[in-house]
Length: 349
Image 1 (spheres, rainbow, N blue to C red):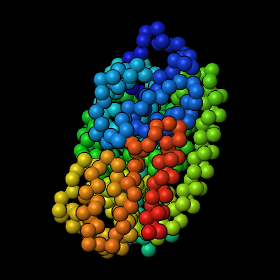
Image 2 (cartoon, rainbow, N blue to C red):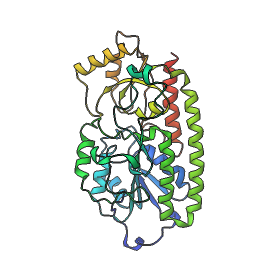
Image 3 (cartoon, helix red, strand yellow):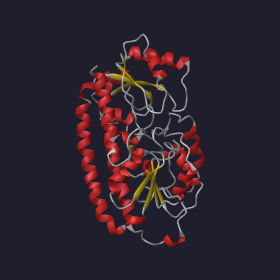
Image 4 (cartoon, rainbow, N blue to C red):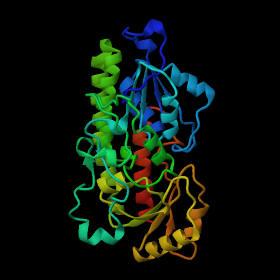
């Protein structure tokens, strides 16, 4: 996606030196993937502060200034971080901004497509990831997704014809309809994004293109090994139905053939009412849910209330955006490993 972020006139049209590259990212996952590829050839700055909510964050003035001085912006997309979209919209730029959800080949899904526990017996052996679709084949205009015309590197020529519509969808309590933006939960998307990041950095620093390519290959090998490790870790949880705080785990559930019985909140910023909680308790009982997981940046009180008088176990707090982890190249594999281990540990009691 191309946006305009003001650059110093002296730098326009000039290849950037290694020490001069400035990359800004929205959330820890994007920062981690960029760090894997960037290596020692520049600085990646993370906007989301530790422990903050990835969907409703507000930039500080100093962060807005850093964004204005960026050469490259790598972010998930408006459906995940609308505050970043607003900040980018308000600036002028000749720099590139890469919305990872718009990268060609990314496998995207819609909310509600994760395998539900009541469908488990009929579909468990036959899904084979049928609920994910390639970005190339998806009808994005119908879902409020970042779709402003993609070039060969997954950028948008930011015409903004649909920008206000996208933001309306994204800010509606992170309404859970349309495209699910938590696409890094499928490790295959992380590998696809790694290549897109390497291509973007190489455009800005062609003298170091070979380094970026080598870093990307090493990162993808690490992600391949991580995927096999996660599959092994999750073996004890294959037949366990579980509940999460909100619907952020569909990609993970589908990739690793897990069963999610529901989520406490339908929208990230919305507090579920008594009727919603009663319905979820009924679903938990019907689906024989074993575990329920609180989530970072959300009050755990609702989760603990949900299991009062039931035999459902309280799992470890999940951190799907990595907001509590140490930023850096190791964050993405640590996030995925921690999540898998938390689910497996709860499954085993």
